[in-house]
Length: 274
Ligand SMILES: [Zn+2]
Image 1 (spheres, helix red, strand yellow):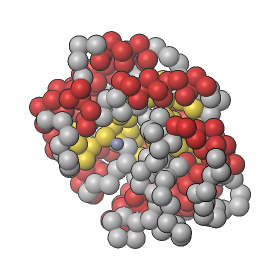
Image 2 (cartoon, rainbow, N blue to C red; image 1 turned 180 degrees about the horizontal axis):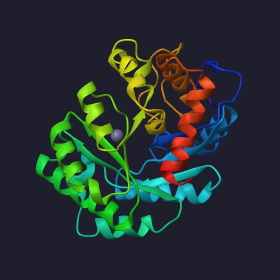
Image 3 (cartoon, rainbow, N blue to C red; image 1 turned 45 degrees about the horizontal axis):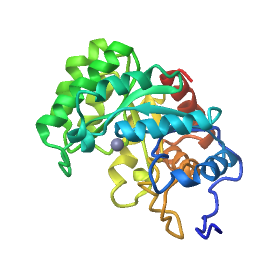
C-alpha cells in the first residue's frame, strides 16, 4: 500500500545528531511502520530512539522491536499510571526479567496521572512505589510520568531519592515551582513538542531556559503531541520531528541549534549509559 501521509518539509537541511528519549513505537499507530519511521528519523540525525514501555505487554513489544533493530532502538520497561489497574502478582517479575536485557535502559514509564484517573489513586501510588523499588534494586534510571499530581508524586519520589540512580520527568509541562522542585531533587527533565504550541506551550517557552544543559533531554512522545506549529498539520507524530523540537528549544534558550542538540545528546548518553 502506498503511504499517502504527506510529510511537511524539514526545518533544517543539516542532520542534527540527537536521541529521541520517548517514542511509543509499539503503539498500534506506529508499530507496523517501524522500519520506515526509523529510516526517516535517521535521515534527519535521530541516531537512537528509546521505545517507551507503558504496560507489561507494550514493554514486551518494545523489547521485540529493540531486538529487531538493535543499532537504532533501546527500550524501557514499566507500567504507566493509566494501566496499573491491570497489574498483578506477575507484573514485577516480568518487568525484572526485561530489565536484565542490556537494551532495556530504564524503569518506566511510571508515576502518577490524576488528569483522567484511568486507574484509582491508591493503585497508582502503590505501583509507583513498587516501580521505584524496582529501580532501587536494579540501579536503573527511571522514566517518570506526572500529570496533575505534582505533590503526591514529588513526596513519593523524595522518599526513594537517596536509593535510586536517577530519573527523568518526561514530557514536563508543569509549573516553575514543580520544575525547580524536580531539579533540586536531582531529576532530569524531558521536553516534548508541547513547547511548540503557541498557546499551551507559552509558559514552557519561558521556563525551558531555567533547565541546566546537563539535565535537559528531548523527546517527541510519538505518536502523540505532534508539534502544533508545523503546516500542514501532522496527524501522527514521529521522531522525524525531533529536530523541529530541538530548534524551538534552542530559540527559547537563546542558543545555537547545534549547541542545544549536542548538549542534549551528551546528557542523554550519560543518563541512559548509551
Ligand atoms: Zn507519559
